[in-house]
Structures are given as C-alpha cells and as structure tokens.
Length: 292
Image (tube, rainbow, N blue to C red; front, side):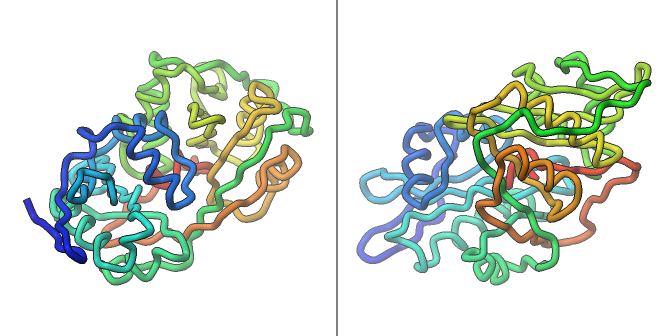
C-alpha cells in the first residue's frame, strides 16, 4: 500500500467498495457535488475505485475508473476534501488507480477547476463540452410525434442485446455492464421501426430526483420524442440530463421543459486511440459525467 504524508499524518488507500455509501455521500456534499448514497451505490456497481482515509479513518478523497474493455475506460468521481486540496492528494490517488489499467485509453469530463490537475497527469483536450442540465420537469412541452411506422415501448432486460448493439455503434465500445444495470430498473423507453430498435433513452433514480441518460438515437427528433416520454413520467420532479449538444432542437426542447444549465465540463483524454461510433446513431445524453 502506497502512503502519502500530508501535514503531520499519513493517508492510506482502501477499495472504494469497502467504504460505507453515507461516508462517500458526505465527502461529495462537502465539495458541493449532489451525489447521494444511492448514486454512489450505482457507480460502485459499474466501476472500480480507491478511497483515501486519514489517521482516524475518515474518507478524505476518492477516484473511480469505469473500464469498458481492456483498451478503454473513463475516469471520474475524483474528489478531495476541501481541507486537503492542493496538497497532491488527487494526483497520488489517480496515479494508483490508473496503474490498474496502464494500457487503456482514458476519457474524463473535467470541471473548470480540475482541468489543470488533469493536464498535469497527461490528459489533453479543450474543445468537447458536456452541459449539465437540471430542473423540475415539465412534461407539457410540445414535441414531434413518432413517425407513422414508429412506436415507443418500455424496455426491459430482454432488450439488452439490441440496446447494447445500438449503443456500441454510437459510443464506440460496449457499455454492457452499465446498460444491464440501468435496464434492471425497468425505466427505459425504446423507439422501434417494425421490430428494429432505432433509439433508446434510459433513466435512474439519483438522490431526490432522476437522471435521464444515456440517450442514443439516429436523429435529434427521435431523441426528443423519447426524452419527452420520461419527462411526462417525471412531471414536477427534479431531473438532470447531461448533453454534449449546446444548441439545436434538443436544447430548445429541454429549456422549454424546465431544465437549465448548471455547469459545463470539458472532455479530456489520455492515450490513443479513443473509441468512436461507427454507425448513424449518436449519443445525445450521457449516462452521467463519470460514465460518459
């Protein structure tokens, strides 16, 4: 175990799976991140991570990695207690975690504050943005209707192969573990033409509200049709959606539906090649900033 001396005490690392979710929740709230215990539980089911403990076993830092295959992973949930920021804790923790997948191409979404940290760790990129939107959903916004040959159906785990195939075509690698756990909650909708899945939108409970995403579709109109179905279900409830689109029909629709931008993140990467979609489908909303 690699120790780090900070001031007059040493930090040690433990597997994040062995830390109580309410302690992780307390750390994220200390830095203003609205990640409740149920969201931490979901993320730990999807990835691996380390937590740093101080001399009396308080959780003072975290970092998580979400491997999608041997060649690609996303990095997220890099959090350091305010009292220890700027003392090398985050680089120390991230280096240990990344060493578990040294050959993997890595991607993350950085806050404005953390961009310098990740630049120092070899991550690059400043053009791709992710916009975090949140608000009380209004399911009454007008939207296009599905085409005459299209129908919307609830998704279940039985649809996993079709969802995974469409998602891989859009995202570039298989996210089977994440998709399987989301479908287990039976909170997803698919758009079908005959028996072929052409778009899907999933959601999950997170804290006092819900996160809608990922949303994958051939075009923006199909994405809007499915997102609206979720917002009708969640009318008046707190909803978050993370999108890579900064203008267009979808962003206009989300504004009409009560969702406003609360933060913009910058996508950064390390090692190459980065995965890219091979089909006509595109990713209109992420599964979350850490999961991409």
